[in-house]
Length: 238
Ligand SMILES: [Zn+2]
Image (cartoon, rainbow, N blue to C red):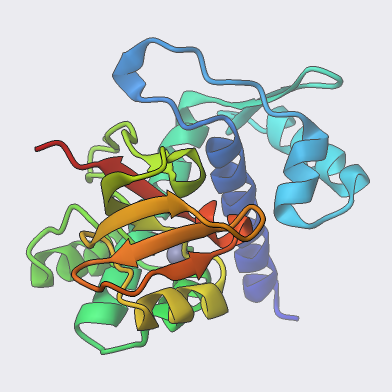
């Protein structure tokens, strides 16, 4: 492996740590005043799918660097420094802009954009990012319904709830669908479940499932709890 490629791999892996820490800390809104939650290294290891020992190792290295991205204490977990938070949000902005570009301009199927964005998000230049944003008309939402952070690093707090928290008989609107599981995304898209769609949610007769009517459809579809956790909704007040 060339030294250049090695450096890229390292920064790619650091970015993924920062994103995972931000996600697990509940990514509180900058102005909310809530202190970010410290993230346990075990939880981080599970999120990244790597051994706990490598996580500890990496966190120690990251914390020791000058202008460090994280504050880490053994047995007390890890929290992003302001610089780490900025970098994590920048990578998320890249990811979501790339997904929007692939979906809208390059006509990628919805279930393929995430994997491609996971690769590209670490490497695009500021200029490329700006050109994509301009081409797309500075979008605020990606194709999964997730907020695209602004260039200044602002990201609104999420108001939505998980489908698993919905009360039976309620009317909702789909806010976002997790981008992590391609087969789930494909099947939800096929049943017309996309951000902005109306839903009527009822608890199903079959154990633990949800019975959901999508849009104007009169035939409900059954959703398992695993899939329901991937869908975030907003109550429809009217
Ligand atoms: Zn994604």
